[in-house]
Image 1: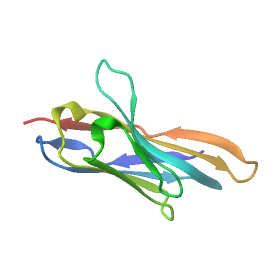
Image 2 (image 1 turned 90 degrees about the vertical axis):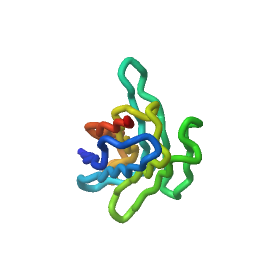
Image 3 (image 1 turned 120 degrees about the vertical axis):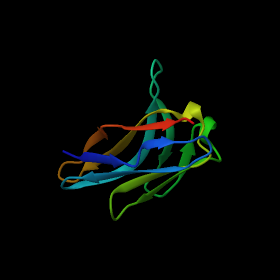
Length: 121
């Protein structure tokens, strides 16, 4: 089973920056898509950014120009650099990884435990 460990959340003032990391571990798997989602209290979980194995990216309109997603395929790790943070960015951020197991080409989709980002003065 592929497990994800997230880090990098915290409290930051408006206009500040944070960088989230998510590392995938396990045996015999390959990753296609890696992404970040967020969920604020009382709201549905929404896509923030997603990146393919070839590093093609897509972003939610609300974060374009402020957030940047990247990945290190050798380390099975995805990053989210968040700049110019706003109070509306406050949410629990979840890492998501989609791929397959090489032994039988079974697909999987794994989620991290979530890391809290709070933007407040």
